Image (cartoon, rainbow, N blue to C red; front, side, top):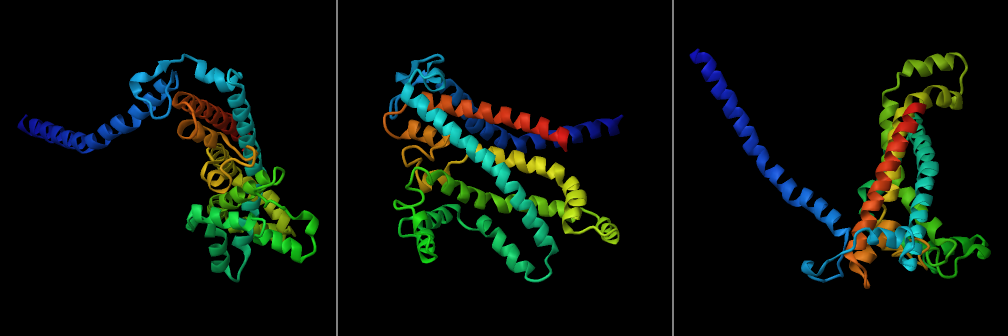
Length: 308
């Protein structure tokens, strides 16, 4: 009897110690994390100008959402749908370019026998370098007097020169930004595929070689089927990343020229902190994007899981 009482007291003390240790993290989450989320939801239904006191907030109901979703504020609605369109173009580009490039590079990296360390360092360079520094370097490359124009001029392709720079022309700005985004996203996706390749039994390749299979047949019939689940994860990660893109666009173009490279996160930042925007509408746009991202992720998981 005394033994049972001793064990119960020991269990109670262990549980109490665990709760005491976890309490700071839970309190921090409730004060900072949960409060911020609830405050943002509350603010999305109010009008509040930049620098205004919280007491001056005026209830707006769904007006903040109507402003940019159904054109109650025509200029803001045009900017929002154009920015959302740019996000979708980037999403498609990420899926069509990042996934196949990463897969091919990871397969090639696994099969090369010389200079493995050099190529691994080269391909992973975007991951270990400051992203902001990289975007400034690319901005320099895209300048009117930048490396890209100089190379085109040197090989006699003067007709392709971008007079105002590759991120200064209306028709080249978005593709130029997408190229940088894709270049930066390939290394992480390549690591996912490379990890998946390590799990493939090499006896499958040896058996295929005995049957006369070449590199491409082994890629299509052995490598690709095993890597399908990883592809599902890679697509979802890249789609979420494409929707949340901000720093690349902000550093390189700030959404210009004429809004051709503006994405929703940049528009939200401008609405919240620049000009004569409204913090309530900025929060409303943020929650709208969260809903779209959540829905897109669910659709992607369901549709791709069935194919995997």
